Length: 129
Image (cartoon, rainbow, N blue to C red; front, side):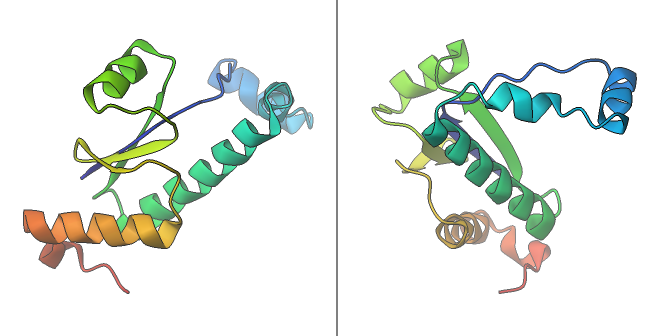
């Protein structure tokens, strides 16, 4: 099951894996420094989205793939035109626009469970309530 988030996604640059380990070991936090330049509402949305994505990953154990798309990217522009997305953030589940705002985790979870049930995959997921 694919859950696509279309919205403003902060661009974060990273060093190679080895360099990142060294930077974190010294106490440097390049990601947080990069985020400081973004407006508060973008940072808030980014952290909310990250929290929702982590919960989805944990609860659905790989059965749900979370796909963040920057609305300013070529793919984001295409999705905005195709699905008539006028405001972001927007959530698509299996390519169908279901939310024109960032929903709560419970709202999103209910729609995912509904989509899994319709596709016949709910019995195999055994997701607790």
